[in-house]
Length: 117
Image (tube, rainbow, N blue to C red; front, side, top):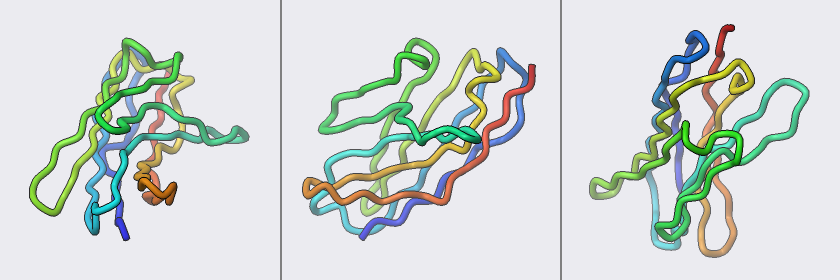
């Protein structure tokens, strides 16, 4: 089992920056990777960025603006999403995700990011 808690969301003006954090705790025995997804009102949840077996992947819409990193400290992992040059279309609830080698997905409760124009 993995528990995820996001933080760092908020309201910023277009062009600004935010850093999201996700504290992960639990068993990482079968851990494969982590990522960030987002869901805007009326839209499907979409992948923003992920790190799977050390390989990063970004949605085309955020390439060059967002950076995902993971740090480990004993039994805890923290995944960050540094976001720059934010746009109103980046407004969404951002969810942290962890996936195991068996394909089990764990989700955080989400954090709201709102970009004003």
